[in-house]
Length: 493
Image (cartoon, rainbow, N blue to C red):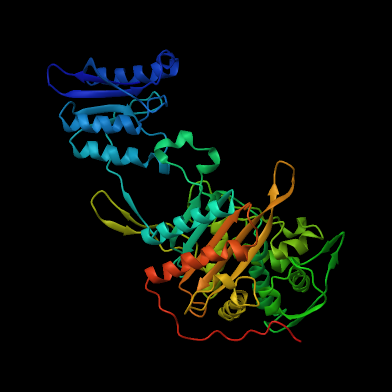
């Protein structure tokens, strides 16, 4: 139950409501609850208000002296009836997403002419609330809806543990869609498992696998180690220190170009090029693209991932990091990598807040994020052309193609680290891409964690990319460029 105690001052006629909730008789006897309630009574006495217990209604199962939605809705209704003019309560403890309704309902009370007085931590300042600001997000509601629908359907179809879809404007860093699954009802958050209450796009880190090869390729092109047409002889296996590396599918000796290495997602070919590059330059590229640090979006609960310094890399780790194993990121960081390639090598940190609207209605644009040149426009353009080959019939993601548009991207099929055994168990399937490839306007990243029905990024994540990107291009009224994709040379045979 939740007690709202109505106070009236016989001299002035002002009526105040004190709110301190409890959900059981045992909690009524709790010293903390009694202390919180007594503090509110003390504040009421200081204001010359007399107590009349009047309103009692159901609570949502929590205890304390902060505000809950059912109580606030009833208080709003009673205020509209003129039952009281002042509300004394403890302020919300947090302003996380699930407490946003508290702020909105408090604003409703203020508009109804109710004076809201907060008390916190036993110190009762009696300071009235100050009108706050509103935020205008970068999210496009139509794109967000489509991304969420497509993601939930695929998470269910594949039996995945979780998933994320991110849609970005690579030129501004604006996040147009940020979908996560599974989700929860914020009105019933206590009934949701803990894993469902976060945002997997920023809180869930994973080893990216082959989508990380774009960074190795960018560093190698930028350093002049290779060109897109450089021949790379790929043996069936490659021994590095105490490990023997294989590609996803068995093969004999292959004579590929560097474009072919990327299109066919050859681990061995990527390691051979990374050995020429050196681990220091590879590490610098990973840092430049944003690994091992916050994405800059300012979202709560974000993990910076894991990027050990190169002097801590083992002999085999220098090889595995080149193809995305031994380093960890979140999905938003990975989307930002491809946004940098789409933006001619200039990294613009992702952001979700476009404007702030003050209590006076004045709109203040969010300061433009900083811009960092990671690779040259020439390198970025070469990469985009190489990544187009990934969506060809000879590449790993023909299902990502969109009729009429040139599409560039990369698949990822990485092993998942299971902390319960300290071993690899299960997979992460992903695809990150951009369109139109020769003049990118949008980037879409799709990540599926621990799917049970299949595990390849090209067959699980690429179709979701196709659906979301096709919808977003139409929603943003982005036309095809009308140019034909160049014919990529994948082999030297």
